[in-house]
Image 1 (cartoon, helix red, strand yellow):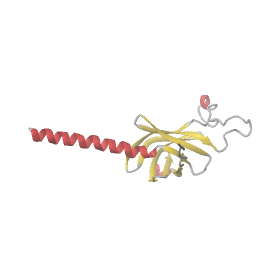
Image 2: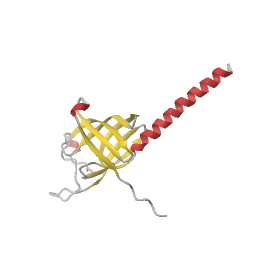
Image 3: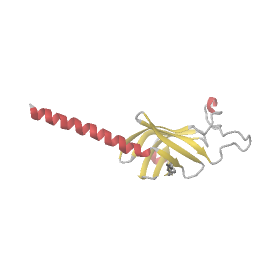
Image 4: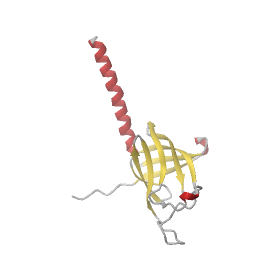
Amino acid sequence: MNSLKITLVIALTSIFSFGALAQVEGDKLIGVWEPSHGKAKVKIEKIGNKYYGKIVWLKEPNDPETGNPKVDKNNPDESMTSTPLRGYRILKDFEYTDKNTWSEGTIYDPENGSTYSSTIKMKDDNTLDIRGYIGVSALGRTDVWKRLQMPSKKK
């Protein structure tokens, strides 16, 4: 009976250790990233067990026509067209699967007002391939995002 208890404890410890390792691996996505177009910076954070990304910086923060902060004017939901782009969550509901891949999420493109299914693959600690698609991933487009190194705080 003691050997059964020991085996059970070892099995449960292994399961919980694997879950903790997967959580640590998934958290590598957290940080501030710059899409290839360089027009924005997106902060990816974890809420619960999912990952989300919001715009935290815009190269052109104000609308050149009005001088006011840029808003989500292309959103198909009319009630959202006056929402400021800075602070807008464009990555939603990503789950870490395995092998440096996050899936089951969506990416919103404020330039055309469209939301796409999306997967994120980490090529290395500072490079993401973010693929947006409708229906089948093979029919999508991939953008390369680079991690921004935040300045260290001086003591």
